[in-house]
Amino acid sequence: MNLRTNYRAVSPGAFKAMMAMEQYISGQFENKVLYELLKIRVSQINGCAFCLDMHAKDLMKLGDYADHILLLSVWREVSFFTDQERVMLELAEAVTRISEHGVPIALYDKVREHFSESELVDLILAINTINNWNRIAITTGMYPGCFN
Image (tube, rainbow, N blue to C red; front, side, top):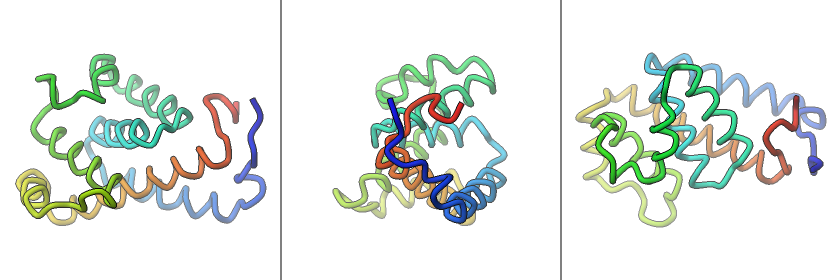
């Protein structure tokens, strides 16, 4: 497989800007497991192999989360996700698929039961950032290991 476009080389300024946002957002999450679950779930929805591979490996570095990774796409059907993880996943799905149903006020209210207002903003930014990464990776033809 070959990349369609190596956006990092073609537009280093854009890559630098994306990395700055990524570094800012990642610094806002004390719970790195939650952050990686968010990135994996959004990447599943978008079908981004590059990001799925990267973030599943990143989550595994944090501990034994194989079951979480394997069953993340069916998180509603298993019991080991926490209430906070569940509401974050629901928000991630709604924001990623925002054109379908928006973000209902009931979901917003549920998120606010588990996250402060500033944490909610960080979640929205994190969801949008991984959506942006997914769209770059898919459009430019990135695949697992292409930058190794």
